[in-house]
Image (tube, rainbow, N blue to C red):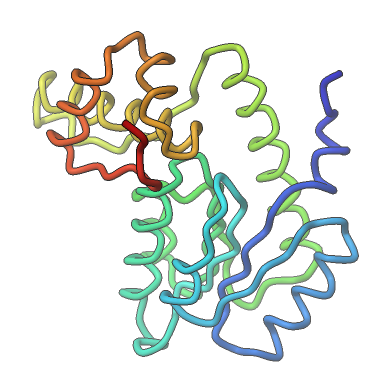
Length: 209
């Protein structure tokens, strides 16, 4: 029996990345009461130590040691999506250019500071529903990808960008299982290892021989 979108919300994993501990604690309490499994991190390293995929991420773009800029937030956004392309990242920022760059790099949504709790709840709920329906797509052998490319790079480069995302998405969906990833892609393991090497992708867990 398939889980409905609203029921799925009570099982969704939410990672809140916020360097202000008071704000982080408040958001954690609010979203826990909404039925989410909430985890928190105060910097990039704590966030990357949390291994769950895919998930919803509420990401404050201004993180230490560069709290007044967006460099740490962008580095973390890139890393999270590289490891789990299916994750839904909601960027929180006070700068329009930062919001644009976050979306360009694959953020699901963005909120501007200061953000009302009602707006945060709505954004997370949308992300939950997207995550739920994309999981249903995955169960039927389909994938919804987000790829930002420069059209001027030409068809070959664009095709390779999509190719890489398909590999990363499927590998993430199988929790790093190379054999299962190869099966879903219709490849033998040796051919999949070629693509992993080509795009510098490392499985998230050791593979048995």
